[in-house]
Amino acid sequence: MEENNSFSIKNWNADDRPREKMLLKGRIALSDAELIAILIGSGSRNESAVSLSQRILAVANNNLSELGKLSIPELMEFKGIGEAKAISIAAAMELGRRRRTGEALERKKITSSNSVFEYVQPIIGELPHEEFWILYLNNSNKIIKSAQLSKGGITGTVVDVRLAFKEALQLGAVGIILAHNHPSGTLKPSQADIQLTKKLKIAGDSLDIKVLDHLIITEKAYFSFADENML
Image 1 (cartoon, rainbow, N blue to C red):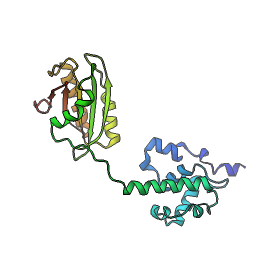
Image 2: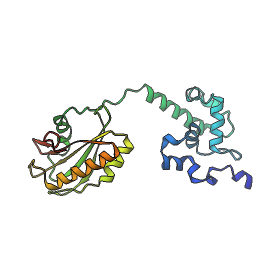
Image 3: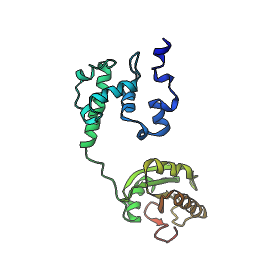
Image 4: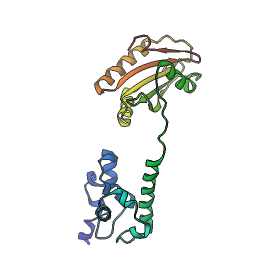
């Protein structure tokens, strides 16, 4: 019994368990076998899920395209793979195929401060309170993601610089654009706006992530730090 228990992933070091490893190190750190092991959940009494996955991959010449060609009955021929696990593997392979053949999401390209205004104004331009947003861009100046970083009152909002760049690093962004609204309608940046912009720019420079602009948005107009040479 003790020998059989040693095959269980539960007895492995946390750093070596596929699920925990993904959480700690990210999905790219996992091998193909470890990713499949997450799909099937458990192995047999005498074999871990990872070992079973390695055996399945070996039959497919360690090639995911070949694995995707295996039918559910063929997958079920492996000891430890029942119908439910075979269906999980087949479904994952089909999702991968559909992802490759699907059209890439068309991303908005930022070409000027005005294009930022047109994108952000419908989101925050008419709000009765301040919100601070960040646009995360790739190296083609296309928006990977836009996200609200903070939400405040009528006269201000608090921004956590660490959260701003944590998201940028996770997304692989090479540039960011800051934007917040002034419910009062004034376009003049406050001293706090200026200091925050400098703080974010310094942080970005140290991480090689450019702060490309900071816009103050009102219902019908905007102020651009970049256009005013304030970056």
